[in-house]
Length: 486
Image (spheres, one colour):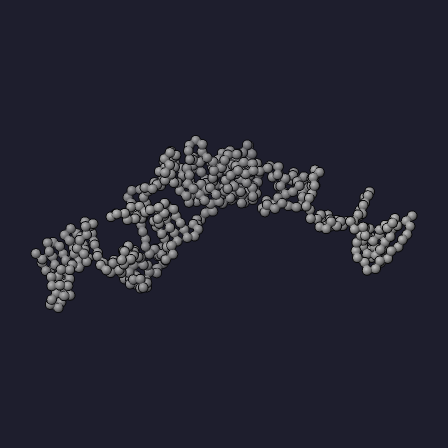
């Protein structure tokens, strides 16, 4: 039987009244919407279940059930008198957290956190998620991996749910109403703009035969599959450089093993390190093959993990973006009984084969005194421009110069211009032939010693004659004189 504890005041017919009652060890707050007080507002069951505006939940053993009915606003609100954020269009100003439906009809859960202005270390954390476990965190990198905080996306199938289909979006991150990041069902990340890092290279995690310094040049370790080792000799094929930051791309062994078990990959890296595959990287170098200049190719050297200037065709680490002559270096090494300077230079890592000619490199090196006496041309090592100021004589060995616009002599002493006009101060020759397709323009232009005017001297019928004006020029008046030449 029901034991009525308290009856609220009302109209006499039960409308608007409520009672607190205890029945069979269960506690109720009932609304008197009818004379039987049949509507339970709050029910506390004997097994510990608590219901608000509901009386049963088959999926719950012990817990709290709230039935919001047709209401679409806040269902749980957390308040504090210390908070006054002022976002009253969203909630009351002292609310710091609340739950509500995403959609009034279809449901979904909104978790909202509100933070007041402050200057402590937690400023800017409206919602803070933290996870802690007693056991060590999972370190596997596979499709079965788990994290301290795990987010799981699912899709309805029948009366339960299952995995999201191909190319489906699992997680999206938005700036207010504009989506900026998407992570899909295949594990691919998409960004509305460029992914950035405080690095200037692209690095991937690889297993290294031994722990190596940042900037160490690596080659493939031939003693075991999928492992790299520091380069130790000239001419080795470089496979990367130890990066100075965390790898953007981690080991994907787990996924690869699942998809391609026939590869027989190792299960775990023993010495994983970030390896730069392309981009700007500080690389260990030495002066073993001479000073390094901007634009020089870098290759492996006799020193472990260290590069040197490349002067012959072979495999290259990349291109030097800085110079190194060892002058300010404080570290040295001994190579073939000789001391060399060591340090790091910034290199654009661009692994591959470089075809170089040692003779050309010598001839185009303006700092090489021995080559300057015979070098025919030079290349600016910074701009790559071929210099037109030659170091020595130009010997074409019987070959021709073709398609030349004009030729200029030193200090302007002579020239042949674009029209074929020869301008010189003195001529000495054994034979000269004067010929023009227009015979009326044939002659030699000389200048009158008194007047300084040009005169055209020519032969007509074996008689030397002359007329005013240069040969071939149109003259308004002409004077012709005939004389015998003795």
